[in-house]
View 1 (cartoon, one colour):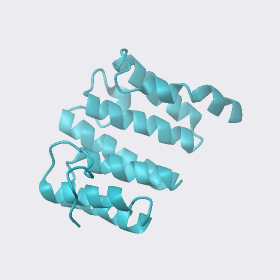
View 2 (view 1 turned 60 degrees about the vertical axis):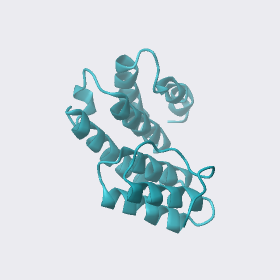
View 3 (view 1 turned 90 degrees about the vertical axis):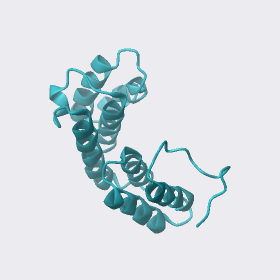
View 4 (view 1 turned 45 degrees about the horizontal axis):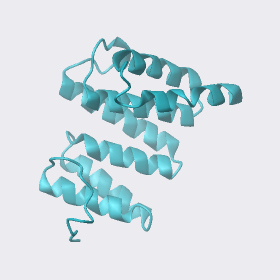
Length: 153
């Protein structure tokens, strides 16, 4: 599948084969979810260090309301982001983290909310907001969902 430059999503500097898989998955997301999932999984299998592939698969599962699969993907994303940053895979131990790891932590907090695990989401958000006081990652958006989730729980 060839993509016109105007149709391509910018995932950053990626290996060409991974970029093609992510473009294919993004293009198929709404029309053929099975193709999208396969493309995102293939991208991760091809190069497990490419963080945007985890983000794509995570978002795919979330949109399909497959929260357990999104949770597992999010944990893999967190682990890979932590590995690349040279920090603990246990985000509760983080005293500093780069944006890529914080983005994965935000996704983790969000999916915990979606799974009904309000306390786990609040714990992740506490760390995220402490490490990102300027809110560059947007943790406040997820934190704004906490009161409603707490009232339902």
